[in-house]
Image (tube, rainbow, N blue to C red; front, side, top):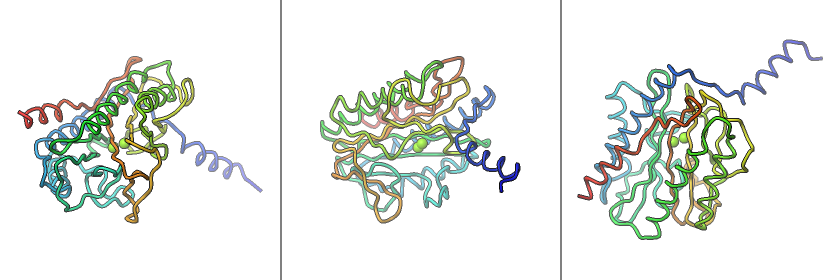
Length: 278
Ligand code: MG
Ligand code: MG
């Protein structure tokens, strides 16, 4: 027979899992520091991504950069992940383990960077072209980034998570792309992955209400071909079922005074990429 204590424990276990931790403005300022750190780290990487460099080289640079800025890599050891960056090449969608295989001209790499500072996580991803990529891939990158922007436009008080999801899905699918279902964005804070889940597909007007203090990582994972995915035997790497390329962009978004306040930025990356391109 259940005691009141059992009942309360069950209630907490059931409910705690879906509990959204809304942040104060002070906490959001701390989160901005973590978010900007990962943005700057990705900006550093942007200066050295080119044919010949290896994902492990990038991982080493990122780990040093994060530790030099009094932070801890967010993914290293998280669920036993072995590295600081997730680096997913071409048909790899997310959760790629950095290897020593040199990147080649025409590849794309999705780099996901996390950092923990002042007790809060930053989490951001960017898909880099390596050298010259095909027009087809260039469009995939552009549309995935646009879908992130359209999702963020829906992130405001009065909307629901489903509005964000729908906007992303609509834009990606209007170009014939596959929207990954099994992996989603998430709440962010003292934990890397908090409630609510932020899918990249969904229905308008459904899901959690968006309120002030919500902080979410919005991260479309968009495939050139099928939405279906598989996992490699390493227990981590997610690949597209048809082996066509996949793109991934991610921002950390806080809701402040009713509106989206994007805590991360692509400015560092894009300034670096433009400088490299000359
Ligand atoms: Mg991420
Ligand atoms: Mg994330």
